[in-house]
Every structure is written in structure tokens, then in C-alpha cells.
Length: 313
Image 1 (tube, rainbow, N blue to C red):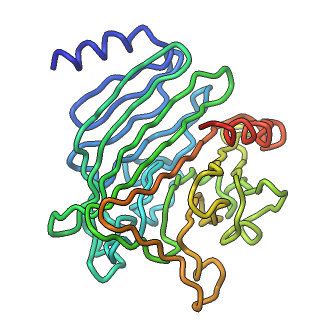
Image 2: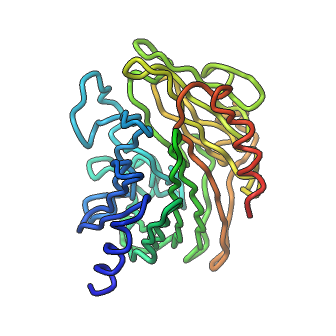
């Protein structure tokens, strides 16, 4: 408890600051709320919600965490921003709400918070480190996750870096399914499907779901008009990630996800196999950057931002 008090007192005077309560960590940037990191026992997977632009507009859907006008009520497992996968030894960590059975033959699983390892605010950036266990319905751990999230202060953008290492607690197979993996669910106003105003675009200039879903690209931007202003969200796939450039499970109804595993779904070829196997003790590392920005990908200079991200170690 003494350590937690020390962390909070240091963070309180920082431009990126954190405040921990039993079920979440609040993140403020430049004195303004940015997001909450939900890690309590009621969260069947850790997630960030809501996520806001630098001027305070909420970008992510409210449902099922809160009631917002115009929210679609589909896919209750789409909570803010999260990272899980639909088939891990046939356990579903994607559609894993407590009232869902899970699509895998082994049912649904929970991602359980084990420890917050770091919570350091700072003038330009702040870091949260955490350990999680991916457990099946019997409580057996399939994967141990070590995650670092770095939040940056910026005049116009909100930027988060994710560095996730998954260690196999037993032999693990990431199954080939489109239901994964690093994802955010956007507000109705930003989706492509009417009544939304959004449009997806890739690093190589392709646009709309038809040209983006199931395709591979280093980054994808999803931009539209929200509360009278043009804003966008970009997900960047680091060149060191497995199977870079990743496939994109990004939908016109506002789901926006990078998924390196759903090969036979994305290629529409059942002869292909996107499974990935880890033997006990083996690790796999994923790195992503998310940018919440004003304007579209061109005006936000996302290509330049990606070039800088790609060079990070």
C-alpha cells in the first residue's frame, strides 16, 4: 500500500498521470481524462474505456459499459480497446462475456489480472505494466501475458504503444479464425455503415471495408466526423510482429482489429492454415501503436508517424 501511495503522489503532478482504484486505473493527460484501464474481477478481459481525443471527444462505443445515444447493441464483447483471440486451444477469449458460451469447442476463457508491475507517470509519457493469465473454464492457465502500455502527451494527438509478450504455460495453438486480436470498437458516428460518417483507409491507399477487410497492411486508419469535427483512429502493426504486415478484421459497423491468425477466413481459402503453435515456455511478442488524431490520415501525417514507430526497438 505504501508503494501505491508513492506512485499516486508522483503521478499527480505529471502530465501523464494515473490513479488506481480497485477495479481500474484512470489515465489523465495534460490534466484531462483520457481513458480508464479496467482490470477488476468483473472484467473477463482487461480493456480501455472510454477513449477520447485530445479535445475530449469520446471515440469508442459506450455499450455495454454505459448508455450512449445511437449506440448499437450488438457484440457485447466489443469493450473499448482490448487484445484477445477467439481460439486458443479451442478456448474463446474473444466472445467471452460471462453469458456467452464461446465459439471454441472448449468454451470461453477469462483473462485474469495477476499484478500491476509498473505505474509511472511523467511529463511527456507514462507507463503501465501488468501481468495477466489467460485461463480456460477450469481455471488452468494457457498463456501468461506481460504487457506494457505507454501513453504519450501531445498537443493534438493521443498515442498509446502496446508491447505484449505471451508465454505458453502449456502447449498452445492460436487457431485460425477471424475473431481476433488487437481491437477497438468505435462509436456509431465513426463507423462506415450508415448512419456513420467513417471510412477506412490503408497504408497503400485502399479505402472502405471491401478493400480493407481480410487484406494485409502495416497500418489502417478509420476516420469520420464526430461532433462536427473530422477525427481518426490509426492502428499500426510493428515490423517485428509475427506475420507482418498483419491482416485486418475491420468492419463497416465500427469494429477495427489487427489479426495475424485468420488466414483461411481472410483469404477465403479453407486449404490454408493460419494456426500458430507455441510449445510450453515459448513466447511470442506483439507491438502496436494506436493514434487518435484530428483530420484524416493524410492531414495527420500517419505515414510519417508510422515510419518513426517502425524504427523503435
